[in-house]
Length: 129
Image 1 (tube, one colour):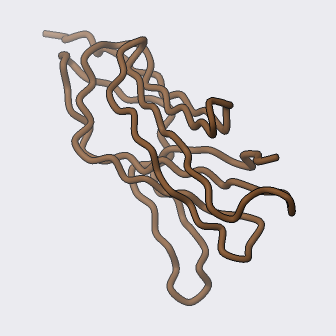
Image 2 (cartoon, one colour):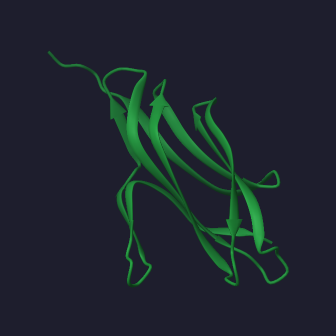
């Protein structure tokens, strides 16, 4: 059975070419804006997915991105574990339009089953004169 070991969203991610380690820069817990709609330039959604011996090597996952209850993105992605038991899935989303304050949710699914979740709080900044 597939499982998610870690899910996070950051503004940037770096993969070290020598060690293959990932660094997540500016992990996102909150995004603030003075007015809506607003656009966030880039978010990297990262999910470490673990499989069992009897799970298939090639799978398809769905990443659903929502601003409150409004779906922003709903895409399928193919993953090839090769001969490994873990896969680091990284999806870079560029120019994300956020219509309302509230939440920005990243929902990972495999065959309709949950495979990870991350939520960012979206704040409306009050103007001060």
